[in-house]
Amino acid sequence: MHFGAIARVPGDPILGLMEAYANDPSPHKFDLGVGVFKDAQGLTPVPAAVKQAEQRLLDSQTSKSYVGGHGDVAFGQLITRLVMGDDAPLIAAARVGATQTPGGTGALRLAAEFLRQCLPGRGIWLSDPTWPIHETIFASAGLQVGHYPYVGADNRLNVAGMLASLEAAPKGDVVLLHACCHNPTGFDLSQHDWQAVLEVVKRRELLPLIDFAYQGFGDGLQEDAWAVRLFAAELPELLITSSCSKNFGLYRERTGALLVCADTAERLQNVRSQLALLARNLWSTPPDHGAAVVATILGDAALKRLWVEEVEAMRQRIATLRIGLVEALEPHGLSERFAHIAEQRGMFSYTGLSPQQVAQLRERHSVYMVGTGRANIAGADASRLQVLAAAIADVCR
Ligand code: LMR
Image 1 (cartoon, protein in one colour):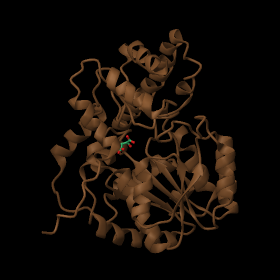
Image 2 (tube, protein in one colour):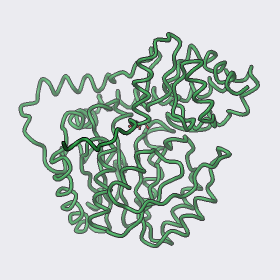
Image 3 (tube, helix red, strand yellow):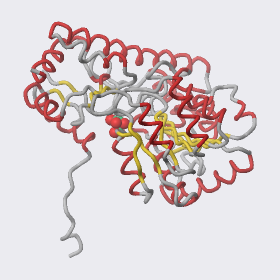
Image 4 (cartoon, protein in one colour):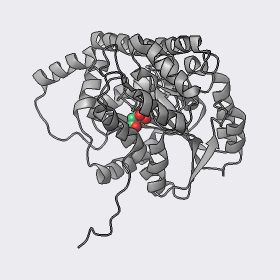
């Protein structure tokens, strides 16, 4: 027997919520768990721009042969422009390149492997709290994981604590930052805060790894890239993980990229040669479909316009839901306590609800959210915000 001593472990807490929600027969249930966008009908739609691009691919694709180690070349160029800006000097200087990955998670996994093998001995600093998979990806790659304060027990952004902690980080370590729409809290740094972080990064010679999973869901496609572009302009080297899961609605197609900025074109090619080898060991070559869809959309002016409109509609829906929920909490005398929900950005809100209150919401009201009190606001139903507010009020009594 080989498997007799293998223990059963609990499933992923975020993905597990999908199953628990699906199995709940209540017609009044709310799915505020996993980070997927939902429309007014409660569906996670395939954007029209994606549907049209898929049709074009169906009609025109002539081969399913492998894409190369860095993936689809057109996708790499177009995603780089989306992240860095069309006229980014780094593009003209051939100092930035993208490696296509299976989703943003794949990009993080590839970055972890790159750090472990090519920059051994560097620790990585994660925000406290952060997306739980950040913790496990870097720890299981064997990196020393440290934490900088981000949001405290008072459910407020702690920029002073963050800066002090990074100031004490060993020179040369890696710091993981969320470009926008911080997961899980929804609290984003202001431009002023970003400047302060940049100063510490320079002083401590830290290597930033910026996770950019929600471009377009915070303040807009260009606005959300502000910090990434600032860091790219001011620093010689930078790693960025980009995801097309949310903004292209391509979740299950696993589409993302690891972008590397280096101080010379020569050094960029050296790094990229390593990434191609590392990726070969992880997944050989990336899946094609999602990246081909993205390249089709971004490479066609009309399709891109349609997509930009669709992203903006998703962004506005979430912003409206945030305001609506705070308004619905008003009759319960809770609008001040939960005012931060309207100020946070992206899908998620650290509500400030305790694990016990989260459990009560689920048991008494079939409201599903992550035990830390993280709610996916994009999963709320605009026509039932009063019901949701009443449920929250019930567990806050
Ligand atoms: C989330 O945090 O809910 C999303 O990023 C989905 C995931 O993979 O966990």
